[in-house]
Figure 1: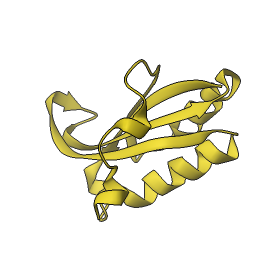
Figure 2: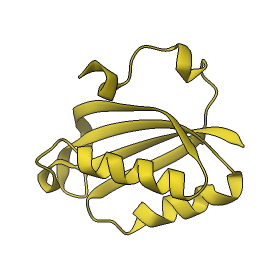
Figure 3: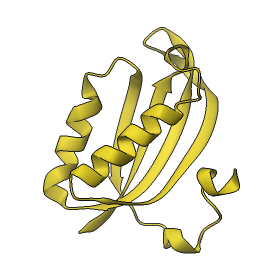
Figure 4: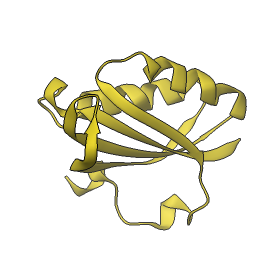
Length: 109
């Protein structure tokens, strides 16, 4: 398994809960595809430098997870046609070990 980082940009007009429900769904889909979430972080609402799909801001979520490389395209495909997700980026993770970082959004609550 390799470690990946995924950033999801959500349409803020589609969520009342800052995207918490979709974040749980993403976590479940990662686990269903044989992966393990190491860290998830709510990055909050951020304005865009230029409009994206006629929107001026979005809600950002960051996930660090382990998964077989053959399943990454399946994960991205699940959200490609979801109109609540404005943009998705999945990259190989090259940062410090997530277990050594600060607490996740869920742990801070």
